[in-house]
Amino acid sequence: MKYNQTENAVVLLQDGTIFHGKAVGDLNYALGEICFNTGMTGYQEVFTDPSYFGQIMVTTNAHIGNYGTNNQDMESSKVQISGLVCKNFSLNPSRADSDLSLSEFISQNKLHTISDVDTRALVRHIRKHGAMNAVIGKLSLGIDFLKEKLSAHPSMNGLELASQVSTKEIYEVAVDDPQYHVGILDLGIKQNIIRELKKRNCRLTVFPFDTKLETIKDYKFDGFFVSNGPGDPSPLKNANEIAQYFLEIDMPYFGICLGHQVLAQSLGIKTFKMHNGHRGINHPVQNLLTGKDEVTSQNHGFAVDRESAENHPDIELSHVHLNDHTLAGIRHKTKPAFSVQYHPEASPGPNDAMYLFDDFIKLMQNA
Ligand SMILES: NC(=O)CC[C@H](N)C(=O)O
View 1 (tube, protein in one colour):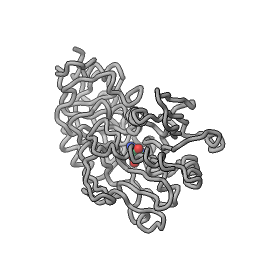
View 2 (view 1 turned 90 degrees about the vertical axis):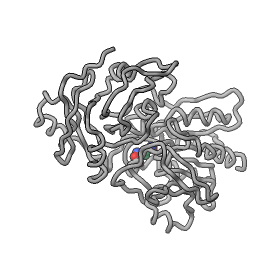
View 3 (view 1 turned 30 degrees about the horizontal axis):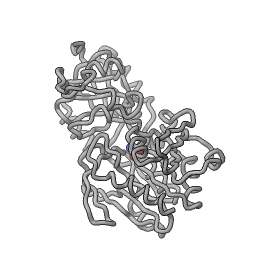
């Protein structure tokens, strides 16, 4: 098993702090905004989730790789995170249907990785000082070289990244017994959203992030979905215009994460960059419409401003995050439109919020 861990490497943060570790495989250097995910499982889905594009991810679980990787657990066609920081690998995956060990997966996907880092200290540092850019790299490249690369790297604040992960062409997804036609604006869609819509007999037409409204208007849909995706929602003017149009014509609308932020923005509600994002698979959320709590999968660094949503005459808050009381979902009072900040499609994570896909189907049935 290839697992070269002999070279010294560093995590260098934008505030100058350095954490030491070992280069894994072919690590050269990689840049991104550093973030941490607290899930104890689901690493492969996270690495391949396009919403993570541009992020260096720290895994808080001390061991990673315990169950290897499997071709069916991809959330997109490739690894999307810019780099990985971890403590230890488990070198002997234990899972009957694992295709590769994590170290093989890392080298096949050329994922820049550093291990043997004191990830607990690193996470405490980021929690205290907030999201910031970082570089991971071999120490032999020199700290000055890494610093120079890091200072030239753009801030996540204001950064448009959907263009880096969205489909380049419009495509169709067929199902055996289509009941609904759903249009999807792909800002970086996860495969499990497509699977969940297919399970509910939706045939899909998926559009690139920059498709002109005029083109989309030529199609007939029963509902419109705006996906998750990376980067800051504020530069997504085209997506806002599309959401506004579907609201105007009373089209059922469902948005997840970035698609939630787009719905809010299209109504004039503000979004903001969080001190630290929510990334993990055990985030408690309360559904304010039913009073029920759900444990959710989350991955976001921006959020919709709760006060700005509360003051909007046409919006009701449907969900709140129970750890910090940030806004987790909204519903339009008079239009068939709703969205959530978290990930009902799970993958990874619990299935408590799958009912939201059924709610979307009901909106289309009633329309
Ligand atoms: N999962 C997502 O869609 C993330 C949305 C957005 N990029 C954020 O970080 O808040």
